[in-house]
Length: 98
Length: 306
Image (tube, rainbow over all chains, first blue to last red; front, side, top):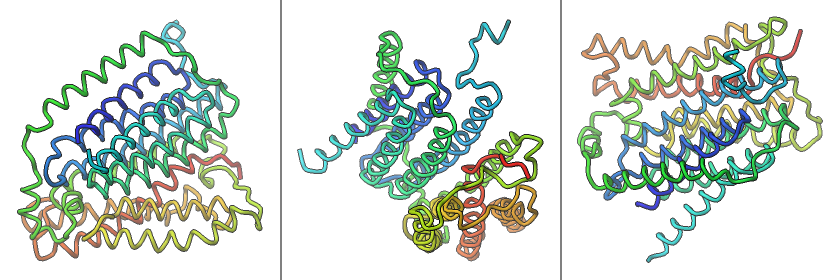
């Protein structure tokens, strides 16, 4: 099932590109989820020659739930930032330090 | 090349195209809509990988609940910045290199490495359930699942801690507006009972077929959210003591069962004769708490003033 391995690797790349190029927090959260999905796919497709292995599957289900928890918290933080400052991006490192 | 391989190839291409759209689309709404499509296609991919339990979780949680959460955020952030349409060459090259590196590395290890599947199969007789994924989640690796349930709770505490002082101890989320004879209200009336049945079925079926507390709990959460959004049900306030008990019931039951296991030998170790009963009790307790926690995570911090 190497095609799913390659897809997982490509998803990590696509998500990282979104993470780097987009400054909008919601897009970054979305890109973070795509990286996560890519990693799950890499793990799930790993060493799949015979029967499917329930241990990585259970780990991935746990991962999906934890990713949602992190996403929910991140979205609420972004919304609160927008409410308070009107911004949808984090300030630059220079601005923050100064 | 057989038909299955062709299907996998097309599916993977489609997943990648949709992922590119979700990241590169100009409008936030486009990004999020494509992300939901991405999640559903990925669920199809999990079915192709013989991971039906993961497919259910991805469709319900990855695509469904995350989609609702992000759509709600888009509604509140509308008109903020249209996104990138130009391709930036240097980050693209960097990410391409990383993807090729990871892909190459994983292809090399694809056939090696120990497999835990034989051990799971050898011990499935004592696990108390027939579904190997449920056996791993609630017996062999129940530590992970207990901590996962706690992570959900902590995330909700984090979300609630973003409440403004004026809205403290109020009803979570915004006031929902739905026409009583509109599509949403009718959907809420029609779909919520089915969601209830499907959710409970998924929890019950989890011991021998794909399903379980997380998948079932998510469907229950979705049914309740639909009723709330259709204006048919009112969420309790964050100060409600009963609600707080519902939220901790699952993890608490899990912990108590774990301590009972300790008196019989090992923490979170189920005596073989009791395993089936304990797992079923924990599954239903967890499903209730997970449903409530997930729904409240999606609704967010209270935002209406009394």
